[in-house]
Length: 287
Length: 313
Image 1 (cartoon, chains in turn purple, cyan):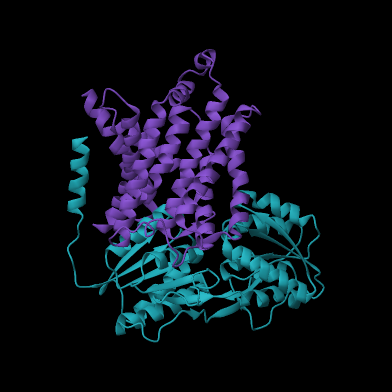
Image 2: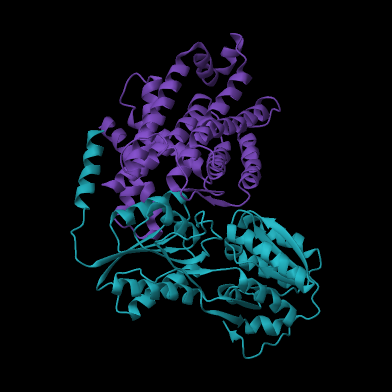
């Protein structure tokens, strides 16, 4: 069963990314491609700092900040320079590719016999148990903090910006600042995800972020559909759905791998499984 | 919601396969690729020659389709099945496997020497469970100097490289050094993915290069045809270090024989399957490198190759 546990671990690692995508996509309606770059950025910061002898605990806030700066840049380019949000994200992502290469000095940086966040917290158990517990702790902290933040006046203004920008501006909220902050937060979370995954897999790679935004979007959508039976969608339920969506996405792939599908059809089969999971509840509710 | 869960659980239960007493081996490919396929064929041929095939071993084959999380999960699955050994092809699965298991022997192929992949520890030792065959960068010197011996008047050599691939960047650094020593001017341009190749090669060709050297990286592998076509238009011959690229239009190459690379790793793996002991085993440098040329291309550029070269179609 440790195989499915490691799928859950990857799912939890990507949950931070999925929550970041939830903020940019569902709250602000911005498809944020910066994700591909800031995910790798978080991984690169982790690999460079940890292999340089720094504690993984020190690397965590730095990874978050690095991602947040990238996100803020996208936000500034979008709001102040009036560049389309999609293009702003693509530009920052493209620029981050060079930044990431420069930071690492090479395209792949393994972490050999270095401490990780999972074994630095003095949690007993095997490596995989430590990973599971630490990830549960980190994702819970992120979840609780986000739920709290979204319920403050500031958070409500942020959510309102995504719902009806004109109205909220008329109420005297600076929506540009809201968007910049929101994108910074989203990409900070994405970078934390890169930081975690780098330590789970034991290396950072320049291509680790390519297409990662799709994983996040998929998780957000799966989570949304899974919890659609709840009448009242509180922010807590929505974020929990995103986390479950992220784990389910990994479980589906794990299942596809374990039944030994012909390698050529792997992605097709995964797509069909995901389709089945998200469509079955709808078919039933209409019947 | 409940119905989905029950379907999922049912499926999980139904797929827990019955245990057989065959040996299990795992084989992981990073992507679908003709060159990697050769190494894989070599590996399994070596096992077969030593009496191991699907009749007496259980092979778990997974291909990550070039997706890193999929590759990790494939490895997780293979490891969860407690295989006797894991074969990894090429570098990225090798690095991940080393991180994921310290006990199951790993037989690598199409991977660099452990220190070039930064897999050695502080004392410079490779992981204790890493075996198989690796390559250094020495072959590049010989491959590059083919240009000098075939085109004595060549002055300028052009190349493209991919910054995102360690082997490409390392190889570039090596050929820069070799070019300098051989008195050749190297004109290099970076490419990030195969969709940019045509543009970059076209821009490279405006520098009046005498020959193009194709570094064996994934970008070149996926866009060789357009490189050859662009170079043909400007009458610039392409040299490389990989046989597969010669059959796709390069003039000549010197480098590792991919089939033999996998075969060598397979021989080691077969030895381990027989003895069940890794004593005396260690990663080996790839043993078969060869010179090859493409007869059609050779006549197109009026070049002749002696009997030390094997012709490929």
